[in-house]
Length: 336
Image (cartoon, rainbow, N blue to C red; front, side, top):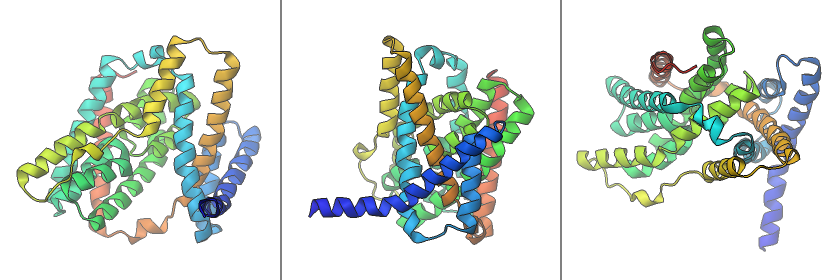
């Protein structure tokens, strides 16, 4: 019985996974002729065009979701083989100060803007955590800790993902205009603001592979604060006495973040053979490209039009504050 269920699960994954792999292969081939754009950029662009015009079938949903999430998680783990303590040390205390100041600004601003626009406290809180930490994952952890309704959670996840998609496509251009080839500044802008891991990888891939590595360091540092943020919001909800909140014990750091840190430590203390690091890099790049193709295939522009004006206004204002705050703190903390 279990074997039959597993076989059925694989069959549901294959169509979307196969399409994602095909788009990634096409992108890699086109990369030979268009090296300035890069395979990652082409993969997401091809995915967006094909997904919105030709491939909207429900049968692809499970496989593209698998490609977007699972393969991307493994690519993050493999990224650890290209990072050492020396790489992390480049962030320095200024880097830590930057992301902490930015997280605090985003959380406070999102709550105040939400209150001003008439959104419930729960929705404003989830919007704050989703933008400050790690998108849908943060919202999923925060929702039960503050007693949010499923409908509220779904609406905020949609809004945060829409906002993240817009920022994913625009911030690399803004970074190039303001910072040129400055690796740390571009990485801080993308890794410090973009909501989900997928959006950080996708946005940084539009710059170059080295930016992906450093942007992910900023992103992973944000994710490590997930438990702290959820705990603060839980205590806030308890003081307000708005809802019966659940236990914090269920909140945990995503497995791939822990695995990334373990691999990073291993890579720092043990001199691994070059072929091992190179192999991990090549496999991780392919996983990443397939995941980016899936992200593009799943990006539905119709969703942008379905949300109400107040929701879109909320998203635009929070995104604007987040971006301006990032630019300000990059300057103040001298991230370069």
